[in-house]
Amino acid sequence: MQRNLLLGSCLAVLLTTVGCQDQRTEPSSPATGTAAELSKQPSPLAHLKRQHGRLKLPPSAWVADLRVPKATRKVIDPGDYVCDPNPSPLINIVINDVNEFATEEPAIFDLIFNDLWADLIPGWEAQFLLTGDTPQSFGYRGQYTKILLKTERDTKRFWDIPSDDILLLAMKGTMLNDPQRVATTYQLPFIPPFFGLSESDANFVAGLVRDAMLQSEVLDGGNHSLFSFNAFAFGTADGSIQQRIVMGDAIMEAYDAVGFGDVAPQAIYVHEFGHHIQFENDYFNDPVPGATTQAELTRYTELMADAMAGYYLTHSRGAAMNRKRVEQFLEVFFQVGDCAFVDPGHHGTPNQRMTAARFGFDVADQAHKQGHILTSEQFHDLFVAAYPQLIAPDAT
Image 1: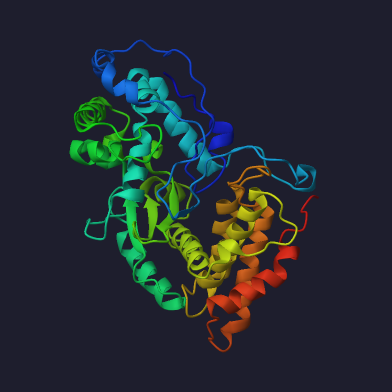
Image 2: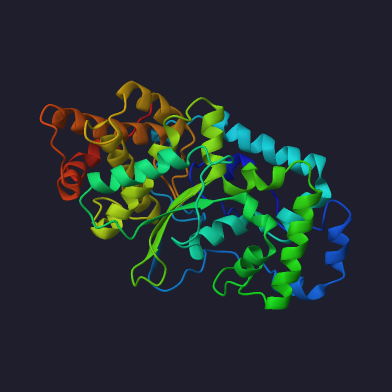
């Protein structure tokens, strides 16, 4: 079975787990090594059946920035909006990393990516299994740990929602070297395509993953874009899974590579925290004037999170960052946004996202003289009033 990379369209949206519709063909490379071993064990493969459609989440679960495209009725005219069709330098890092892996080690790539879907395991572990008792380190060398812990503390003090229960967790490709953690994740009962492998099958597959990681000279022990180029917010209304913000190592490393390692960890975290504000205050259920599709509803909440991030990052009692520097980062941050106008995961065009962030800057500037922090409800009301102008068509 083969999972085709649709890099041109799938990786074009920042901070998302991409779940493009997959095509299946016969394997392009002959099975060798551990792949040959896998072919002798039909039992695990019998369970590894990909189910198209959305992730089957536990009851009461909510998630933001975890995206699985689904076609809907088109109501937005793409001709009204401007998007650069060329991959950004950031996305090119991921494309080049994955292409290098697929080209230099095709048999291991087929096993990890096409047969076992192991690239998804780090994210699923972070989403469903990690707890506050798990030691956390952010970045391939742990270099973002200190700044993210500080950002977590400061952000929770800044905003007025209850937030002590929101975990900050790391998504790390290196966990694929731990058969116990990998096997536990493969046994999760509610995640397609696995629907819960048996303990024996999960242990067998986890052994294959570990062996493949050891054999690979490209994957660097799991420190690779394929495994952790993502960040998202997640929780459940009934508390069955503790609320969390998951930060992938690779997304922060990629931003560092293009010159924004001093801003990216903070900006990504506060955007995701904005989604927790929306959940806590029930803004996900706001009436959105004129919205008739899930794409337009998602755009509303994403632009609100962008505005909240802009407000916090430049506020004198928030991160107090230089506005020009934050804007430089956001230009890159949003240029890997999307023009997927019919997609339920649509985040808004790059211009709309920057306009929303600038709205947050301006609100912070107005409060700068008095050092006043708006409540989340006050900021929300200002955003709602400005929203029609924020999404005005941006065609040149």
